[in-house]
Each structure stands twice: as structure tokens, then as C-alpha cells.
Length: 416
Image: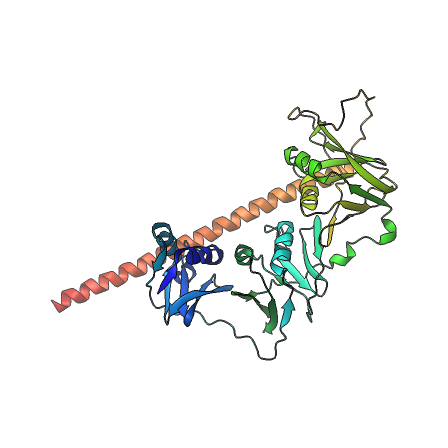
């Protein structure tokens, strides 16, 4: 078959998110090409998910080529690529039942998933939080510290959680689409179709958290802050050094002004114009700098919270609602990494006594830090286990090939 180089290159960017050129399973290293006249369907699988793209290509064919070889062909070819492959026994893809309801997706569905994806923690121990939830309330993602709900019209009978959409984010499909969900034994399967993009797989197991319980009641939000210079705040947050585990930035609110102070370097400050309606928090109020930066970059400029300093922050102004928990305890470890950033010329001010850190907050911080380290060790252990399994499979494959080669040699000797 013949296919344009740029078409194949774009397809491999998507299919390469599913198949792996280092997988010990041959089918999972391959891209399947199926010609159906004036179009061809390019397919890839990781054993659980299947992704297919329809592109322009003439002919009737059905063969497979390894991803590594395809990438080399794209690298060395010019305008048009001529491909030949081997016949493959492709695993049977689950057929969508005829009675399954097809639910229409909004035209900007791909953009919604792109907004939700940064909120997902792919290393989260709870597997259901490693994906993005779809329900009648829209698209929802959370990592336990922040939550993003993007309302859209989804006429789903039941909510379900998509695995992290690597291929869909790479494909960036546009136009009208649909999703179908059905049960096979104890598993839920889904099929997403948008334009020339098809994605089919298993929904993540487990019930998604009841995130509506996290949303504070309107009457508890007696503090509303609107940042009038978000670009300056974004530039400031980008240069604030990290300080695990909280990466805290303190927000001091006044009627017409907001002061941001980096917990890791209290000499780093920024004053910007802001509008405060209601009562400013009476306690030290801080947010994770990465979460605040993400909110502002997605267009959220108005922040509602409670004056008690413990109420979750509800950010609006973007597509939906972005909710984040304030940092309960911050560790101020003074450094001289950056100079003071001020809206006006620096003024001499009386030093204020710093609040003593609560013992329980300090203990909670230590526990969270330990939990993060344990999760990192667990993830590394899982990675090593997977690599050992792959090495064992590869070794067994080599042993089988050796036995087959020896038998072939013996047959040749006997024939002679």
C-alpha cells in the first residue's frame, strides 16, 4: 500500500500512545493496516484498549508492521511511503451490542478532556482516580487535592470512568462524536467515536468518589476575590521555587489589593490589583502554587471561599468549576533564591510575628510526606516487577526460537 509520509507520521503519534515497540508481545508492537477501497484503517492495541484511525489510502489489504520499523520508514522517506507487512492474527474486538444507547458527545469533547487531564494523578493508588469520569453532570477529574468539573450535556444512564486518554489527547479529534457503554460480565466496556478516531476499551473499575460532597454550600462562601492582573500572577508563580509537599503560596487579601508570598522564600512577594467582596480569611490562607497556576492558566480569575480559612476554594471564570483545598500548614524556610517582586517601591514595614505551626498540622504534613515517599517506592517496585516479567518473557521467547532453530537443523541433517 502507498500512504503519504505526513499522514503516516501523524497517525503514529496517536497509535504510538497505545502500542509499544518494546513490548514482549508481538501484536502490541505492531500497527495493523486494513484497506477498504479508498480508505485504510490503522489500528493498535495494548491488549486492553484498541485505537483506530481512518486515513486516505487506496487498495484492499490486511497486514501488520512493527512500530519501530514504521518510525524508521517515516524518518528516512520523502513524500510518499510504500508499505508491506506480514499477516497478523488480530485479537477479536468486543462487538457493541445492538441495543446499546449511543450518547452524543459535544463538539469540544476533546478540549474538555485536555482541560481535565492535568488534574489527574496517574500515580494515584486508587485506580479509579487515574482516569476521567463521565456522567450526566459532565466531565470530572480529581487527584484528592483539586477537582475540576466541566459541565456538558451527556445523556448517560450511568456514570463511568475513562482510563487516561493518551491517544485521544494526541489525536485532538474535532467534530461531532458519540460514546457507547455496555456491560460484559463484571466489566464495563466503552467505545468513543469522533470523526476518524475510534477508541474502545475497559472503563476503570470501582466507584468514582461522590465529588459533589466536596463542593461547599453557597452560604459558606462569604469571601469572593477577583484577580485583575492574572498574567502577572502567572509569571510570579512560574519562578516560585518548589517546596514539597505543599508548594504553598500565601494569599493576603485586601479591598483593592492581593499580596502573594512564597512560603519557601518569604522575601518573594507580589502585589497586584484585585477586588475583594465579603470578608477576608481571618487565618493564614495559602494555596498550592501549581494548582493556583493551573487555575489562572485555564481562565479562572474569581475565587470564592470562607472567611474561616478552611473552606475549599471554588474558582470560576473558566469553563466550569475548579475546586481546591487550601493548604492547612506551611513550612516557611527562608531562602534568598529570588529578589522581592513588588507592585510599587519597597516600603519599610514593621515585622509581624509569625504564627506557630500547630503540632497536629505538622504531624499531618509528615504523614503526607511519608505517604508520598511510600507511593513512589511502590510505583518503582511495580515498574521493576514489570521489567522483570518482560525480561523473563523475552528470555523464554529466545529459548523457543533456539529450540525451533535446533530442530530445523536436525531435520536438515536427516534430510541430507
